[in-house]
Length: 381
Ligand SMILES: *Cc1c(COP(=O)(O)O)cnc(C)c1O
Image (cartoon, rainbow, N blue to C red; front, side, top):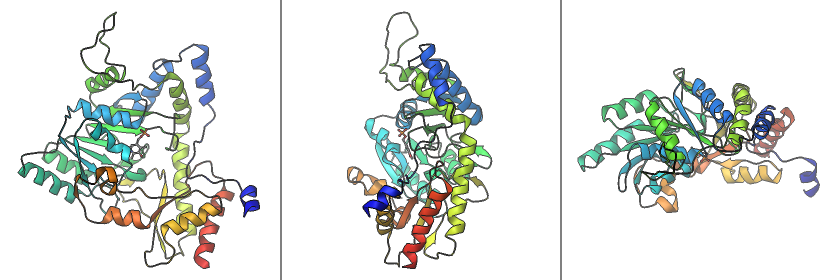
């Protein structure tokens, strides 16, 4: 096995994939000495993101988590407020609720999109209202790039007049009825962490139709400095701005975003076609309203089999192929066990039999075939 590991290079789940121009933008930052959380790359990066997002206003930030935190602050969220969250997500979409001492209320997924179930969302809101504690916001996630059922979700959110923060950290470039995700709610957020569809090494963005909110976010993200010549502070600030150097990486990455999405979608179709005969594996499909960036190709295993998702993960790992189980739902996390929840079993089922397959756009055809052949062999044995 040792020789095999040495011979065949590691296939990662999804690693950074530079486009080529990133270094040029970084060098520009060095040459002009804009090595700061402001500068021309940052402005350009925000403008380019805005063009991709229905000309919404954009603040580029140090992380997606910071963007969610600022969105909650701008909505005036305080200690003990109730915030509805998708349970099937990465913890970073919920942690900022805890930063503010507010309470996450977890809502389970629907089968169709794996995202927040509209019926359970309405149940959660109604119970809150009956108890005289209407939820103050909804943090809605588009998991693995798949658009949530936006018509249904927004209809409910508008009916009860509750603001939506769209966590589109994994969904840059995905669309619902031709509109970019992140532009449906009062706020949208993106992440540019190392494993996302494009990266700034670490970074994020907050977007909103409302210019005032984004200007306020930029101020809060630079230690809430007042606009006077000396350092004056009337409110608590944060150090959350993206640096001009990292924004340079982002500019290079935006140049190749469309080709990355195209490749992610090709990878997804290739897995589906090649594994179509395997009746033990099920792949999620887009609805006719949705365009998914397929940041990650995922599949569910038949639970009647002896090979479960952890067996598959370990088998692939022994061939130097990185796969990963799906997100463990938030309502099962030790830190959130005491939170209120509205559960229908879907996210628990996804976690118990789902897996993310290597989806990196820098994988060559040979590597993709290595993954597929290994899966085929495992099921044939
Ligand atoms: C990555 C991610 C985040 C956090 O983004 P960071 O930039 O890593 O802080 C939030 N929500 C989801 C669903 C994510 O995948």
